[in-house]
Amino acid sequence: MTKSALVTGGTSGIGRATARALHEAGFDVTITFRSNEDQAKSLLNEGEVASIVRLDLSDPQSVDAWVQGQEGSALDVDVLVINAGEILRPSNWREMGIREITETFSVHAIAPILLARKAAAFMEKRGGGRIIFTSSTYGLVGAGPVLAYGAAKASLVSTTYALARDLGVSGITVNCVAPGNIDTPMTAGAGDAVLKWVQETTPVGRLGKAEEVAAQTMYFVNSPFITGQIAVVDGGQVLNM
Ligand SMILES: NC(=O)c1ccc[n+]([C@@H]2O[C@H](COP(=O)([O-])OP(=O)(O)OC[C@H]3O[C@@H](n4cnc5c(N)ncnc54)[C@H](OP(=O)(O)O)[C@@H]3O)[C@@H](O)[C@H]2O)c1
Image 1 (cartoon, rainbow, N blue to C red):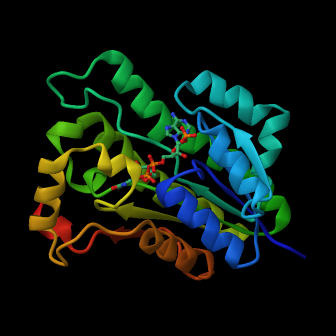
Image 2 (cartoon, rainbow, N blue to C red):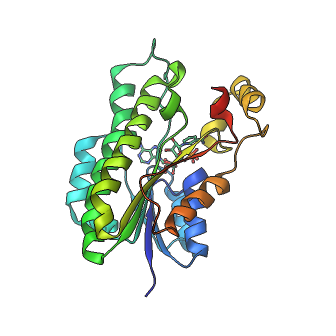
């Protein structure tokens, strides 16, 4: 039987590369999008994804209603990749407002728990599955210019450990990728000074590719005996942070 996967934020960057890798591996892939409906429809028409679902993660109550309602059945999959997100600005700890802080935690900390919990219930009935979170190296070392983002991403490390411990007995592995600076639209918005700093501080001397993060996710998908792991995909930059 064809296996199924859901990738949140599959219209762009890392999520798009991950959806493509899963499609090439034979999965029926559903992606979620927030605003880029044209791109989602185009991927659907090209046959790269099997279905598309609109989902905005910025409000916890709306996410919970989505998860509990009919649309939450999109989480009945073999593989869940929780990827969607962005850095809300201003993001510096001196300037960010309560809206930026609360929405950041909704997208990167609260919504992942709500989505993973529902998917895990479906996977328990299926007899197994894979859950992969997307943290960040900023979630490991922290960074003043993106304080709330880093703090929310840090929570995914603990969420990964907690769920991996509880769900292994059901054949469900729970892992996490922690990308460094990857060449996606999100990074392009950071500005030339940041990109220069990344190149100078990254031992391999370049930005990562979305496909390189997707490859790590596929490694977790294909590894039934690996769970509770945080895979840093950053060209070694965290060594210099
Ligand atoms: N790029 C990096 O250097 C890097 C490093 C570490 C971690 N990450 C993480 O990797 C993930 C993907 O990043 P990316 O670089 O691939 O970004 P991207 O190219 O900008 O794509 C972001 C995706 O997330 C969706 N999204 C954004 N905010 C959302 C929200 N509030 N609710 C629902 N969907 C939302 C977007 O949907 P629409 O386009 O439909 O709006 C889009 O599909 C993010 O969690 C990011 O924090 C990225």
